[in-house]
Image: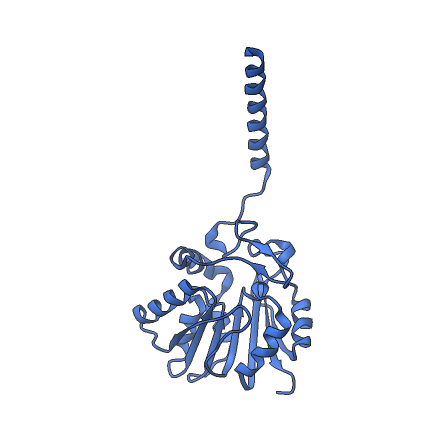
Amino acid sequence: MKQWIARAIALAGLMGCGMTQQALAQPAAEPPAAGAETGHHPGHHGSSDGAFHRRFDDAAKWAREFDNPERDSWQKPEEVVEALRLNGDSSVADIGAGTGYFSVKIARRIPEGKVFAADVEPDMVRYLGQRSQTEGVANLKPVLAGTDAANLPEPVDLILIVDTYHHIGHRKPYFVKLKSSLRPNGRLVIIDFKADSPNGPPPEHRISPEKVTEEMREAGYVLAEARDFLPRQYFLVFKADGS
């Protein structure tokens, strides 16, 4: 009996050592402040609808990451907003708005316009409503989006989708439906992670700009412009075909 216990203890010690070595051998993930997604985590999974699903249901927690000033160095928010070429009275929809990283900046840029900050997470929508009040951006309007539709209350001049395209399932019918939310000559901007970005979804769930362009073409859009000033993301501008 004593010999069996001794063998068990020795085996457990070897297993613990092996697990420690394996953990040390794995590359460290980028600090959360550098990006919203940094590899495989509980709650992440792909699905047959082509989306990479993840819950973002604790707005206060995610605000510490999404709105961390360190993100500005690679997200270049001021340059992004400038590249959107908005008028003071433009109407914008920020789909997948999260905690409002872009929504608030855009709302301040277009004081006579409006920003519909849409998200599928009820707690994010609650947080956006609270933030619009505390930061004095009354033209920011929270919208509870659905998984199959943005639920925008009216057509807009520009739709912005940042780091969210890979989370959208059944993308062709989704974007076909979304065309009705664009005003004549409206634009749709998709910003998402490049294959070699140090942060973002796991590599197997990243969608190349070529694939995005092809999927959008199938949904009835044409690529109008591509910008390359972001180090970790591509920046694609689409218009509805025929607009």
